[in-house]
Amino acid sequence: MGITLDDWQVDVLSDWLAVGASGKWLHIRNGLSCPRQNGKTALLESRINFGTLFRGEKILYTAHDYSTVTQLFDRVQHFFGEKKDDPECKYPELNARVSAVRRAAGKEAIFFKNGAGIYFSTRTKSSRRGFTVDVVVVDEAQELTDTQLKAIMATASSAPLKNPQFIFTGTPPGPETSGDVFAHIRDGALSGEENDVSWNEWSVESVGNIRDEKRWYDTNPSLGIRLDIDVIRAEVSTMNDVSFAQERLGYWLPKYQFTAVIDGKEWEKCATGDPVKDGKVTYAVKFSADGATVSLAVALKPKKGPIHVEIIENRSMSGGISWLADWLVERKSKAATIVVDGLNASLALVEMLRDGGVKGKGAITVPKSGDVVAAASMFLNAIREGEVTHFNQPALNDSALMSEKRLIGSSGGWSFGSKRVDSTLIEAVALAYWSANTTKRNPQRKQVLV
Image 1 (spheres, rainbow, N blue to C red):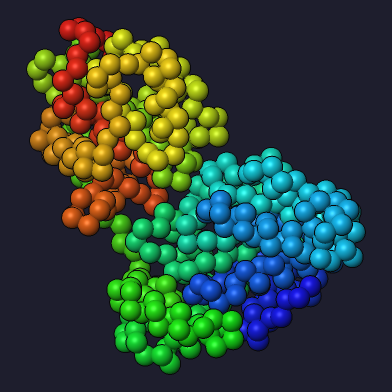
Image 2: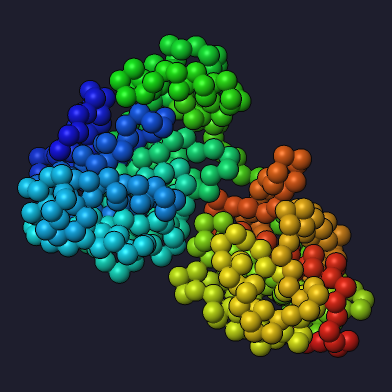
């Protein structure tokens, strides 16, 4: 198939394919942490090709970014063809084994006459639920979250061949990555307490001298083979020391320490079972950065006293956003403003609201990064000063107390973020609180909460 593996790739593949006395995989979970451009994709191609051709496995390949998914799909099509009976296929003997190729965006897959199949997918909290596979390949594993892992693990819980395997490949997580699953697997492997895990890693223990080229060779197993040293020489001149150490030397940042933003006792003091009934109403919608969830919040500002906030809904994005637009359009006459924040689907929601008659200056607010920063700071101060009330909702409590600072920009600005829970809930109520304080619109003098 034209794939020539380096010695280090053969060693890694030998760990992945090792079998025990029972004939089943010796390592159910396999991790690979290696600087980019060293040939990780060739390893994944080899594992996928072997599983489909010689074992009849159903394999799910997942990545954080859709561009990464389509890139591997294109590479696998290079071997097996773009369709059944593809006259242009480079390897007709391999194409002869193909029963179908599905090319629809987001549903890419290749099926084989021996019952094997390769599915390609990005990750969400409900990713690929509803069918089973034998092997799950998690690329860009540093971005994998616990919620996504639950959905992925479920796909192989009843593996058709009764011999499941999971392969996690990536680079050391940075402060901006959304998941900590990869680090957790690494911790278990290095502890020596989990026998079903293989872990291969090329790394340094400290940032050290990033211009020491010997360290480059120590941590980049394909340097001088498929990776050109001039590429690294260009990188070292453009990155800061820590970034270069992470990206090119495989450096893992010191173990992550959780630091809560909101004090639990202060948050508890703001809880109420008897919120205000009348006042100016604002709604806020927050989409998660990975496009997996959305939260809808409301704030009610009375003439006197603290502003009250609540979460109205927190849902998976798998059901679309029509329900959200319909709900808000139905209440458009009550809202002083509707805040819509988040790159994923925000523009689509704004258009749906406008089509539904939510019009007028300030009726819809799309916050800038400075507004998001202001909202977080204003809301945190309100909690400390007892100038806000909430309904003691369990999901909102978790989001509030398990969120920490997510840096925005380079000037020290921040909002709420979390690697443990869905932070869109606390972000949404903060935006609702901020908008209730700052909007000049008030379509009615007397309003009701919902």
